[in-house]
Length: 184
Length: 125
Image (cartoon, rainbow over all chains, first blue to last red; front, side, top):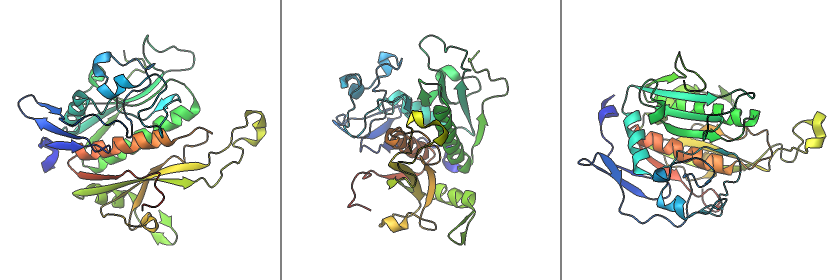
C-alpha cells in the first residue's frame, strides 16, 4: 500500500487535541493546552504501574480514583486504553508499528495459579513492531483482574484491532509461535 | 451475514469502509435488550443482572446524519459491549477507550478519521 510508508503529518484526537509530526525530532508534539475535560485514555488509575515519565500532564493532575471527565470514572479493573495517547512517545510508537507490513499482537494471560511478575498485571494485550519486541510494545488493553469477563473483553478488543489492521492490508501475527505467557 | 432481509458480506463491507479515505466513527449508547434480567438464574445470590445500557461502535465512509442510519448500508456495527457484557458493570469507559483506540489506529493507517463524540447528547444524531 502506498500510504504505509507515509509519515503521518498530524493526528487529531477525539478530544480535539492536535499533534503535529516534527521531522527533525522524529516525534509528535502539540502546542495546545491539555484539555481540562474530555474522554480520558490515559492511565488515570494511579495504581497501574506506569513509569512517571510516561504519564501526561493531565494524568498527573488527576488524583487516584478521579477522572478528568466526570462522565468517565475509571473505577473498575479494566481499561481499553492506550497508555497513554496524550504521550507523544506512544503516538510515535503506534505510528512506527502501523508503518510496517506486519503488526504483532500479544495477548498475555497467566493461569489462575500464577502470579504476574512484580509490577505487572495478569491480563494485557499489546501491539508491537518486531517479533519479541514486547518491551517496546504499546498496551491496548489491561486488566488487574483475571476473570472470564476480563478475558472476554480482551478477546473482543483484540479481534476488533485485528480486523481493522488486517482490512488495511497488513498482516497480523497474533501471539508468536514461541510466545510464552510470562514473556520469557 | 443476513440482517433484516438484507444480505451482505460483513468483511467485504468493513474492508470497503476502512479502505475509504475518510472514515466516520460513531459511538452510541443503546438500551440493553435484557436490561435488569438476571444473568445466571441458577446463581441468584450473585444478583448479577444485565446492564441498562450497552455501547456500540459504528463505522461509515459517509457522514451519518440520523440515528436511523446506524444500520447497513449506511453504516456497519463494528463492535459492541452487548456481546461481551455478561456483567453488571458499566462498560462506557471501555467503549470510549476502544473508540479512541480504533480512531487512532485508523489514523495511523493513513485514513482521515472523524469521531462522533456526542455519546451523551440525545439531541445529536
